[in-house]
Image 1: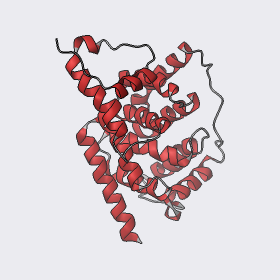
Image 2 (image 1 turned 120 degrees about the vertical axis):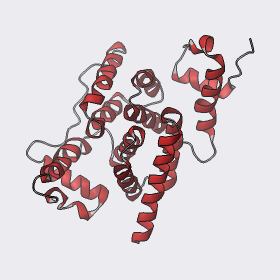
Image 3 (image 1 turned 180 degrees about the horizontal axis):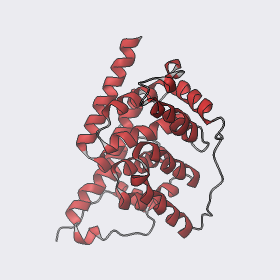
Image 4 (image 1 turned 60 degrees about the vertical axis):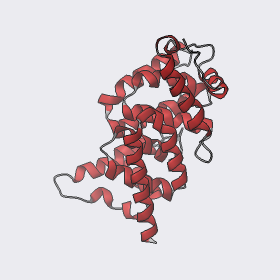
Length: 260
């Protein structure tokens, strides 16, 4: 049988992710693993001008795997993320915020999986609390977070819409933003980045993805950064959703330019 030709860079990167681990796919699927590892762990990472800092890359990967419901790969990547400097608090904050964009029905196994991994590694649970709001001030704080990210047009958004559905816009302010975006552990730029990943990876959310692509750009995650995020996500979500995300980024950029 032909020897598997995995690049030296890919081997070293894999070893840093999973020290001492030898994938059984090398035995069962050698041709596939040669091409996948060389692509995901060398070519994608080293594409000139399209990479991300390692810690950011793993935050993107975890968020993307949540979005596409890749639970087995997610559980494999949590220890790798820790090895590349993503903290337990940051991992938990990614999982918590995913509930707003995926729902607890899809996030439950990921939260359970993270807890199992942390306890196996001796990471004491619960982690230090990160909440900064109370039930009394979460609406006010959530509105301010929306304004900080999207602009002053969000000041009265929680009151908008038909009477029969206006409560959902209020929940968006007090629950999504007041309960989660106000938490410590991640800043606004990181929270908008992971939201972009949740939406891109699950698909079917193009209006929201375009909106959050625009929000990312407004707070400093520029167009090229988002293209780099998509590039690093691509091995985990495939080409159709990556190309759809790119279309949304381009549309959001055009909207910002035309509004100037």
